[in-house]
Amino acid sequence: VVEALVVSNSRLCAQVAACDARAFTEFEREFLKRIFPFYSYTKGITPLIRKELVENPGGLMGQSIRVINRGSEPSEDQFVPEYMRQSAAIPLPEFPLLGVTSPGITRFVTNIDLPHESVLNLLTPGTGNTPTARAMDAISKTGQNILGQFNPLLKGPLEVAMNRQFFSGRQLSDLYSMVEQDVGQLTGGPLARLLEQAALNAPGGSRVLGTIRQLRDDRISLPERLAKLGVNALTGIKLQDVDRDKTYRLAARSTLNQILDQAPGMSTFENLYISPEDIQRLSPEESRQYLLYRILQAESARRRREQARQNELDPLAALGVG
Image 1 (spheres, rainbow, N blue to C red):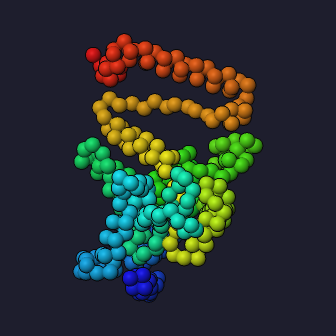
Image 2 (cartoon, one colour):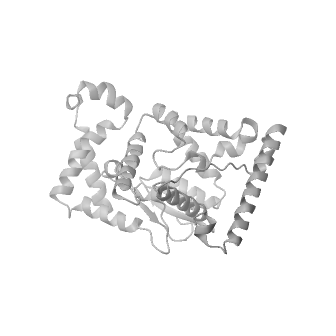
Image 3 (cartoon, rainbow, N blue to C red):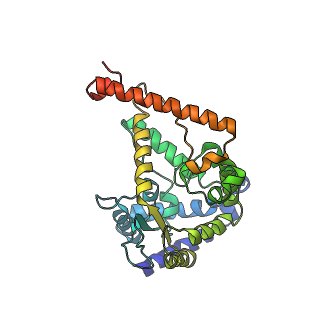
């Protein structure tokens, strides 16, 4: 099956490569191909994928899509983050080297690099309480996927401005930042993350920083890091390690935010927090202001607890609903 997939992929890529400059309009050559580096490949392969799936849905491509989808389905025993379900995300069992034995870490096989992935992964179904909310969410996510195909020189500043990684849909502030961890005390968290994003979007920066991150990932053992680096560098697939507990929390927060955002009268409240190890980076004035902020937070929480006890823990009464 693997050999057949490779042959099929090579055949499609050869057909795409046969397209010459005459297949593109001046607008496409001068504008779209500059904004989307992979525009030529996407345009060339989309008709071939459409023809294969419509005329031969039970063929090799259709079967491979179904197999990958089944392997990536979440279950009661295995949680698969939403951003990974857009592509292949097949969990590996815990065994030495290719799998991981580190507690709390799950390793997934992702990015198998099949020809249909680059096109079909642009479309993401939406979620929400109503058909309208689901449609708007689908449009938003698909738009982010398209923005993720932008030239890095355009994509990088947009991601920083929106605090959003377009490829996965995750907030940049939720992602691990190697630079922020190492030099954040010298440059400040936001500046460190900004520098890292600039490096990631520079030519070759993603590969270099990705390699360094993999070698320094202390969540797993050194042999597991080296095995992961070897597979990612030498094969067409990618191994990705996920912190299960952190992923659960972020997924729950994202889902609740998305659902509650559609509720009538719902408003947003921003809660500021700084980790204990970073408090020393604050100026004396900022430290006093943050202390006052935490005191006000604690006082507000105390009042809510007292109100809940007075209302005999009735959830609607505690929320102020008579």
